[in-house]
Image 1 (tube, rainbow, N blue to C red):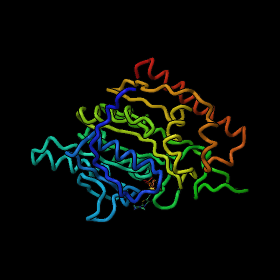
Image 2 (image 1 turned 180 degrees about the vertical axis):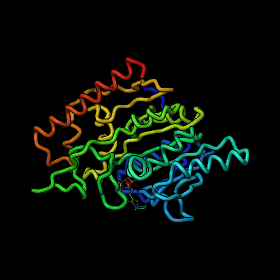
Image 3 (image 1 turned 45 degrees about the vertical axis):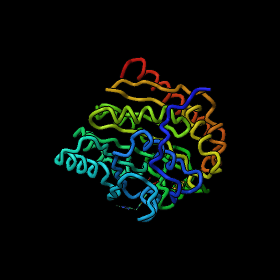
Image 4 (image 1 turned 60 degrees about the vertical axis):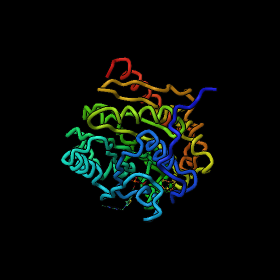
Length: 296
Ligand SMILES: Cc1ncc(C[n+]2csc(CCOP(=O)(O)OP(=O)(O)O)c2C)c(N)n1
Ligand code: SF4
């Protein structure tokens, strides 16, 4: 049996107030294992703003800076500048935000930090909706999903807009490093965060984070669902290193229905609608393969 290379030391302790089976819990845990103690995490309004618990019973071993919902990119820029003025070079600055705080309200601050090449890592944990306030749809909610603001009924249906391609948006900023990670593949996850830590400048990490209440899933299946997302190529694992796309795990190419059928938020979809989703996934996969083979 292969020995794991994941660091044993924990910087996220048990006791987070997250729901059972919260994927974002694992994202924080693996991220901190890779980064270590000399890290400051900036968190805007989101589930993780609540999950550490109340002082003095915080479950994280690193300092936290809370910021306004839209301000993660600006906050990490200010923090980095302050550390630079003090001559502190060995501390990694991290912005850790949900998808709503990233692809929607926080996009301008994120874009500014990326353009300035702020030396920091921005991690977006993507539970594909505004979960902390009651499962409202975000720009990162996939086509076809139920949320409380895209209710399924006779006159409404489900979300009819596509998920924003945040990785493409970040690639357009020509940042030195961006990667997708999954809590189902911790070795790949940790390696990418370690690489981001070694790289100077602005780094972006897109982490899929299953959310049992929001996705209407069994909490014991969160890691399995994250694995199915990769194997069905709904969430391919890849990195963009100095502009070059490299797929780190090809996945098994399972039909998308294997991923959808275990989630209550997709139960209303008809066969033709599932076929439409399969086509979106297939087209995105071909596009990713083309990007990899063309070196862009
Ligand atoms: C300016 C502003 N608008 C709205 C809110 C209310 N609010 C707090 S958390 C949140 C949802 C965050 O969603 P997301 O970023 O996806 O993170 P998640 O809750 O899913 O972890 C909202 C709308 C706020 N705090 N500030
Ligand atoms: S609502 Fe979802 S993202 Fe928020 S703590 Fe619960 S499982 Fe985690």
